[in-house]
Length: 177
Image (cartoon, rainbow, N blue to C red; front, top):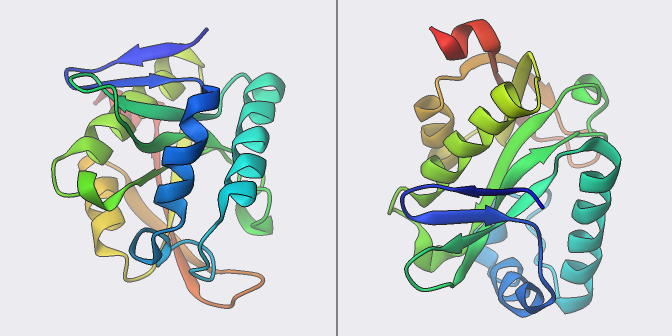
C-alpha cells in the first residue's frame, strides 16, 4: 500500500470511513467554487468519485491520496495525481491536484501535500513531467502551484463550461534544479 508521510500529514489510499468526511468537503459550496461548474457533490457522488480515484490507482499506479492530519487523524481532503481525460488538450498528461475542506485552508496543508505528491510523481513513479490545472482567477490554487515551482504554460478552455483554465508545468530537470 502506498503511503507518504510529511511532517504533518499522511497521504494514503482511501478507507471506507473517509466517505462521510469527504462528502462533507464536497458538499461545501466554498470548496467547490472553482471545481468544474461549482456544483457540490452529495454522498453518492462522492462515493462514485472515490471509486473512480481508486480505479485510477489500480490502472495507472498512481491516483488521488486521502490526506489525513497526523496529529488528529482527521481527513482534511485529497491530493494526488490524475490523468485529465476530460480535457482533450492535456488528456495525455499527468496532473497534480488537491481539494481540502475549508477548516484546513490557510495552514499550508495543500502545499505540503502537493509537494510530497510532486516528489512521488517525479522520483518514485518516474514521470518526466507533471502539470497542474486550475481555473483562471483561483488565487489560492495558483499560489500552491507557484510554491511547487511550476510555471505557466498556456491557457485552455474548459470544453463543457467554457471558462479559461491555466495549465502550469514542471519537468524533472526543473524540479531537480
